[in-house]
Amino acid sequence: MAESLETLIFFRVLQGIVVGPLIPLTMIVAQICGPIQSLAARSSLSTCRSAPWWVVILALLVVGIGCLQVMLDRGKELDWFNSTEIVVLTVVSVVSLAVPLYSSTSAR
Image (cartoon, rainbow, N blue to C red; front, side, top):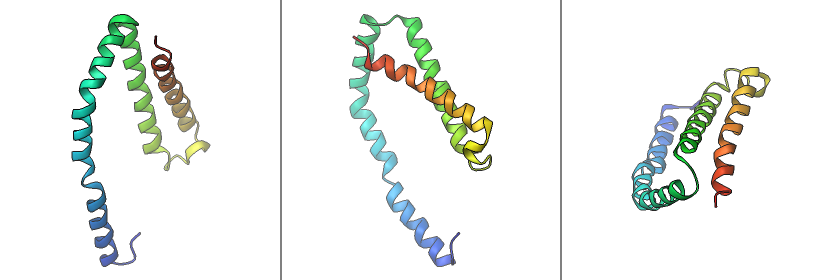
């Protein structure tokens, strides 16, 4: 909690200065890296994996990132790892994200 209104305003301005450039920066990185990743995904899709496998990998990514987000959002109010729900979300997230990671690192 801010001790005064001036402190609150100062840190909000500082937050804007630091975080403000992140969105344009990520757009630039996406424009640079997007075509490269697209080529890599197309070549990997056509040579190493079948289309159903890619659907499974995308589903696992969605589930993993979704569980991670819910875990991070609700962790504080559920007392983090003292809650069974947070532990289950963590395990599902780790497993769901480990499979695509293993698959991408072990691809031919």
